[in-house]
Image (cartoon, rainbow, N blue to C red; front, side):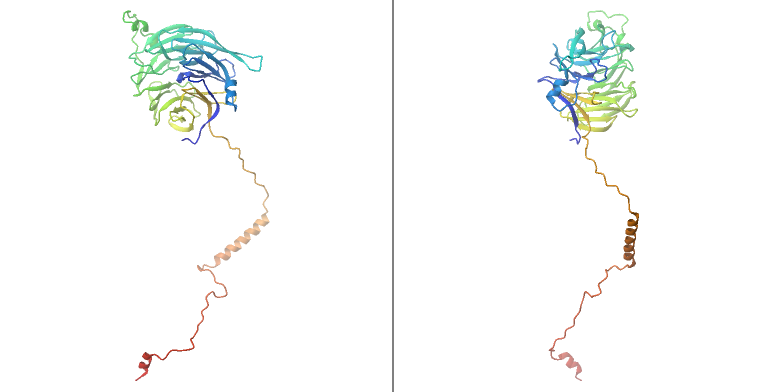
Length: 434
């Protein structure tokens, strides 16, 4: 049991009977306030979309009501949420919501209220794509090195990667040897996609390789002829993990070394962009989620790691720096900045417990009382020093082990002679006779 606990800064309970997973938590300045303060976005499998702007307070019910900016019931289950520049000719951030058979992009805006209830927030649909295959997860980024906006890539349950560039569908590709979907992430440094296949190996596909490969629609249907000019899709490099991966993360902060983090069921892997292993950490527990973030030391990366024993661990590469206890098992963890506090850890459980916490201990308000400062009396000090030196000299003059006795003897011996004597001894008489 940990001596330290994650300090509860703000918390909320989301609905009753709702389920949440890894992709249901997202943070970002989705309303484009320009203050740099993030909002917390949570979606559930029941189709509920909630947006929060937490702030510290004591009453939990009033806090949740005041902090909740928006709550909307969507028609379909929410698989994943992402915030990015998904609208062409616009630098504003928008919200991408992935449903099993639909991809929707919304704009979130707030207008100043005229009453004491505060600002009013609205969710407006910008565009949506109806999917032909059931979606599993998605990722976004500047595919092909195109800056200024973000494109989206959706992985279906049958192994197809569908690429969308804003409001238009680009192309689709099937992953070779696909059996079960795994985590998917985009690496902007190498312009490539990372996923873990059912063969328990990390596979990397460059965007250029995907774009020139055989069309997915023609290859998937055996009755249609293959298009000329297409190439068979093969991964650029492969790294054998030997276990299924829970999540993949590619940190994008500048002063960190280029690394790819893979969280397995029993191990944590850190690879370079070329596939070489930097380090591997064997875990003695079952992890649930993780999040790499910028470290204060150059050349190293810090990461948050949660497990199924309600622990929140902080690692610097492979070194454990902090351990804190949390009241539930998180399925997603994020770091964000609020107006009142920077670096808040946000964790979400599968049954809807949302917690904003910080790691540390309660500050001690006890202060040591001041000692009366007074100047030293050097004459008194010298007199006391001479007195002590006199006692020392007198004690060192005699080297006797036994202590000195007083003038009066402690032991007094007294001789007493009896008044009547016995008769002369027979032996003595025999000696005197001739």
